[in-house]
Image 1 (cartoon, each protein chain N blue to C red):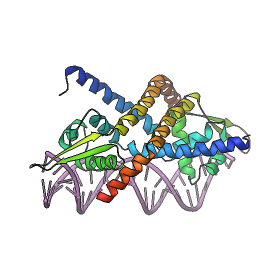
Image 2 (image 1 turned 180 degrees about the vertical axis):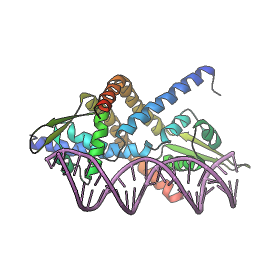
Image 3 (image 1 turned 90 degrees about the vertical axis):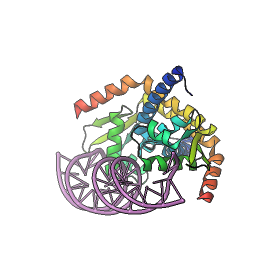
Image 4 (image 1 turned 120 degrees about the vertical axis):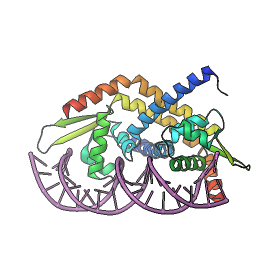
Amino acid sequence: MPEIKDLEAEAAVINEGCTVLEVLNRVSGKWSIGILLQTIHGPVRFTELERSVGGISRRMLTLTLRNLERDGLLIRTVYPTVPPKVEYCATDMARELYSSLLELTGWAERHRETIAAARQTYDVEH
Amino acid sequence: MPEIKDLEAEAAVINEGCTVLEVLNRVSGKWSIGILLQTIHGPVRFTELERSVGGISRRMLTLTLRNLERDGLLIRTVYPTVPPKVEYCATDMARELYSSLLELTGWAERHRETIAAARQTYDVEH
DNA sequence: CTGGATCCCTTTGGATACTG
DNA sequence: CAGTATCCAAAGGGATCCAG
């Protein structure tokens, strides 16, 4: 069915798929987006995050912050005071990513009912 | 820092975050996007997918297909022949989702170098 | 051909205690 | 305050065998 040209396009699409997956892996963790949300309006401290991101454990907070920092989505600033003070703030790149993610929110809202209906149908038949 | 209005906006943002997470959970599996890609240009058979989506096991192919079907992203058509023939095809809703996901590809490409640099910096410091 | 069922390993994430 | 270290439970996913 597909011509040569189509196969080339197909290969490109597959590459796109890989990239999409890479992006998703950056933010698909259980807590990544929640943390990003909190840091997008300005610097936030560790303990603040621990409270505002409900239910997260210290370990996962640290791990997620490290990953986001490593991907250049978060800036970590240490103030050498006693007691220590550390602030996390989203980068411009992260804010831009967030905008793209809002696209997905739009999609979800537009199709909310269709999805619910599909679930309904599927579950009835199984 | 935030006024009342801002807190309201904040609450909305948090909800958005949840919705984004819901969407991501639909396609964040190891294979979901790869499968979606293959079914977006037309009906594809089970065995075709098994071959074209490299490295996937039968179990995961079945599971992922079921999830995508349940979310209304895939239509499963059974032809009551011998041997059986089943075709999977992306819905319009899925195609639309795919477009939104391409936004993320765009983001990734625009910031590819920045991300790599951040990785570099981070890894050197740790 | 299209799966379902089972077993097992790896990864992810939670709870808790400890430290500069 | 801001983590690190350790242990443990749950989920994700691969390999294999079986069935309509």
